[in-house]
Image (tube, rainbow, N blue to C red; front, top):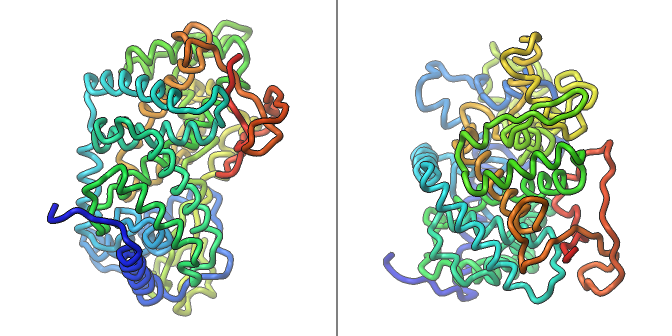
Length: 471
């Protein structure tokens, strides 16, 4: 690094001004004026995949780079709010082919763990959870910020080294809170309302938190650790929270006991073989179970990205290959937002059955190669896109993400002291309760239960009143 970066008001103002110019150049010049009309929402498999694959652009030789540039542009447009909010420049926000390829190469390298690395991660994850618990001021912790801090801690550690997070539980908690606040505000404010005074204050606190964790970070987008941290953390924490709640509060008792045993074994043997190991849950009828099935079901019912947006300049779309899902009225040059509704796709009863809204991991056993309905298997496989689709499918989708999700949930269940897992945090067994007192935590609380027939809420604000307390 050429020099250390000290976050003064002038520095932050400079970063923000640069982000504004970049945002304006990308959104207004290359992709048309910012969109205010309601985006077109696609809910069927064929249309969603067609949108994400981007084969409709008017390029003579689709094997050449111009197609990549157009695809990058259509994805970058809706994501400029992330660039201007977090000062990031990664594969989700860039139109530059070199930046995109460099990011993907770095991501693939960083998450390319072997089994020995996973053993090390499991041990340090257990230690990180204990350290986070010991840093709490009370035996009553709010569940959502606790899980957010835990997942952010592990995300930073696996990406940048465990030494970065040592002794910084408080700073990581502050960073997680700032990411959450800025993420919400970036979605709720109109695009032209780039930076209010409140948002500038939030960004200054974000920069301060980043400097506390990464003292050598310089004020530039290309070297911003958030380039990797944001997609990793945002992919993980919500799905980890919801699988944790499903396992602790809603899975039937017999099945729950089997899964707790599987998680406990995975915590000491975090291999792909252990993740995929299938056991039979006794009952009438009996069902098959594995951690891979459970993670898949979590990703199906609670996809990390509920909707994937593309901003399309219709003047660049081939008239001979005009998509059926795009209105003919859009043929006059304009910029329009279109979204693949992944949540709707993953909950479609025509694909997943009448119980599509239920968390039922055993449905994945029914999709095995021995299942007689091959067409149903193929349709479900095509409709399962929790990490997007080509050409921008997440490089963590096959190995890193499922294994890390399982490991984080396993660590939390172990920390709760459940069933046959190790003694819980502080030598206690823990339970989830619901507080009616906001964040004071001083009022009467009661056990938390879930409606069996409805999926968990997917909003960021959901379950903020849940606490973990000694049983």
